[in-house]
Length: 442
Image (tube, rainbow, N blue to C red):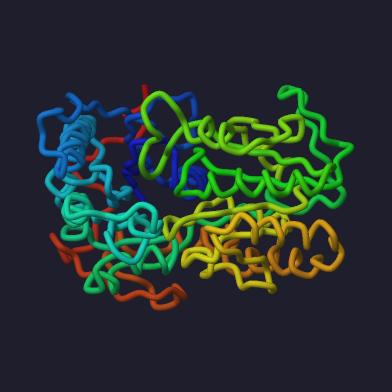
């Protein structure tokens, strides 16, 4: 199978499926991306596309996102023309929707099937945007949020099929599109993210030795922001550390905003919260971003792992923590409830109540043995529903089915047969224009 992956970042959500496909020399894989890094995947040719410019400051702020997507789409179109000159014609284009790279792939490769990864659709009501009562929306917000979906709607209109990682995330899309979007999570490497009984946290390069600590509360997010409950977590620590003199907290993530509004100019949410909430900083450890191996050590050593989120995209980290047998204490919000049942495989708490969050953490710290079954059930949930062993074969089978214009009846997923938008003929394995894949290599 010849696949063109598209994502501004490499390898993003396509890391694991591209790795599996790259092991088969019969597959020809190209990954178009905008961000340069040193990462490589064996069997995958990484190629860069360029954006001519950034969106203009004079562009109406409703459509600045659309302009950025168009510019990315143009950059990918130029890349596709170069790939064609070198003889590469994909059977399948698999692209992340929303950023813009896939806007014009049907114009560049009209005979290729297009599979779109639909992570999020913006709604002003009933999800992330109006979740915090202290941040009411106005008319300008309603109109801006609706317009932000323009590039996603373009992908919905021309793709052959879609994937969304959770039912909650698919539910945000207009219902008319649901039958053409398969719910299929990226999955977790359960052989890697596994329990390590008695684990203690020691990170020499961070000058962090918590081998003496018996009460370790952990928090992981890409950024320190309200969308992931960072302010509430810091307020929780203020309560918890005052009550428990031997408790430590490890916070993994960067001091930036990945989702939602930026902090006021000249400051960050971390700075604001540490100024607001007095903490014993000898027991609060900010590690910054961590490589996978060190991140794994953090969650394996955790006594209680706190995951807070608005009704938004569900983080991989929550399921990875469950896979290690963590006691996950998470916000009682829609994306979390799809995975965690309170008292069965985790604990649910009120996102807006640091007092209640602290109380439940204390329950676990006071009675660690009482929650052993919940930890075990968390691991079982991931093994049964989110393991790579289960999901990656289905993911690849779905990709092959879309490339061949037909979903297999034994896929075991909610789906309908996709209808081709350009051709009902199965893609041939070789065309006269197709050159050997090796000719593309530097």
